[in-house]
Image (cartoon, rainbow, N blue to C red):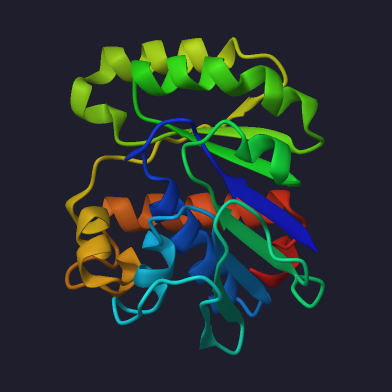
Length: 215
């Protein structure tokens, strides 16, 4: 079993978007997946339930044969051994790093504030056993120079891997959250730049976790 924790100590940065898409992409390829909403807002659970659920303690939702969803604020459920992959949508809380054990920490970065907030918690991340993967997300709106500067700064962070291709600002990806669907299922989403970028990110992450043979 592998666990990917999607985290940054900044809100509104794309953690839930990444969590939902990786979970759905994995399930689509018959990887037994558990998606865990660690954030008390419960957005991951609402999204994967199609917007039709009441988020409360103990919520457990069967999305498909290969994807189950659990609302478990601030801690992973005790019984997760029956899954190949666990995706944890983390809140922007420093203490979560000490309470979650992950094989990979997936960290979205959308600008300078995200970088500075990452600096606040990076010593704690480095003490964990998981790899650290940084992904530039939606920062292209600020221009090419900003993207290049953010990448250069991220590449200076020790013991972290910066994923090569950024995720672009995309109307199709934004629409996905409104429709409670992955980007490849929303109207005019499939085949767009955002769809291709998200699916490639999912494939790369799952390959890094050892599931490449199922893709």
